[in-house]
Amino acid sequence: SYMLSGAAMRVVDSNEELERFLRDAAVVSRDYPVVISKYISGAKEVELDAVGSNGEIINYAIAEHVENAGVHSGDASLLLPAQKLFVETHRRVKSIGQKICRALNISGPFNIQFMCKENEVMVIECNLRASRSLPFISKTYNVNFISIATRIMLGIAQRPVVIQPIDMDFVAAKVPVFSFSRLKNSDPRLGVEMQSTGEVACFGQNQYEAFLKAMISAGFKLPTKNILISIGPTQQKTEFVQYARMLIDMGFQLYATKTTLEFLKVHGFENVQAVYKPFVQREPNVLTMLRTGKLDLVINVPDSMDSQAKSDGFALRRAAVDSSVPLLMDIKNAILLIMSLHRKWTRERSGKEFFSYKSWQEYIEPRELPSFQKA
Image (cartoon, rainbow, N blue to C red; front, side, top):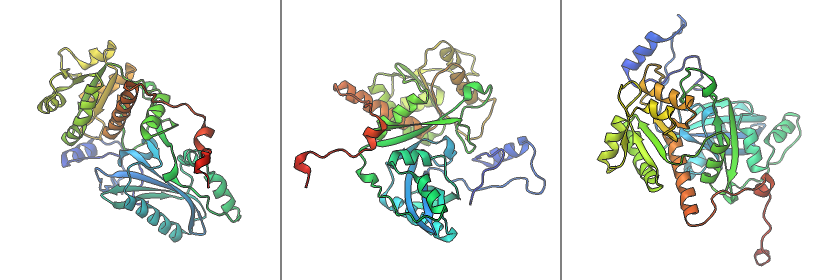
């Protein structure tokens, strides 16, 4: 691995944050007190799960994370087949995976995590084991990767099973399940250390249906009226503007904290209501709205990936969890959810059904072609 997980990992954006973390950190080794790695922002994380035989890839699958790189892979949402990868990125991921497989002469399952940005592909780590995604991939492609890997490790020759992702007429989504409600005073946020305690996978005719199904299955309640938006970084505020308009189009009433409200008003949002942050002793206060059940969804994207228990952000996120109000903490995750809600709203508005209900067999079994299409 080029980057190894460790205890008390943090992402810092400035010298001041680094100094504060080192001052407040718990016990560190005298010999090697801290290891610093470069953090690449705005990169997509992609996973290659594969089975090798004597250094040659027999079968493989490429999945993309919804969240950008920086969120632990165990806490990330996955889409399979990958939906937004450039062809060149896909080719490089496969090529690098094959080179690593040959270099290590792998016979069995392995997983490689990549960061991809503008067609530049970088390896995060390679794990010579089956990943937690392998059963999900096997179900999606109806190919038992573990059975293939086991036979190879027993010395039984295996041929590749033909997999054609481009011909699939469904998408699978896997989302994490968290237990923040049971962990008193924990900060409900995503970061480099894994916090999820489970996961759910669902199939759909497209990424929007699959993702929304998976979120609902993980306990997410779809919003019906009021949504609070509190986004820290300016770049992510800018990215969110067009999706805020989608929420308005769907009839949602938006509430926002001070800087997010000011940003939205500059961009033409006149009907967004102001709410005060937890530590501001004024009403309408976000804590009051959460405790009285007036909010259906909280979108809170923190300024920093470092948890600060005394911050307004922590109090807001904690209150959302304690009030059983759905909470989204990642901008990419929030965007995909809004796009999915908008697709659902558009279809149902035109009298069409959004959700399809099929068994696993109905998804993966090839459909019989009409007689006029047969050779």
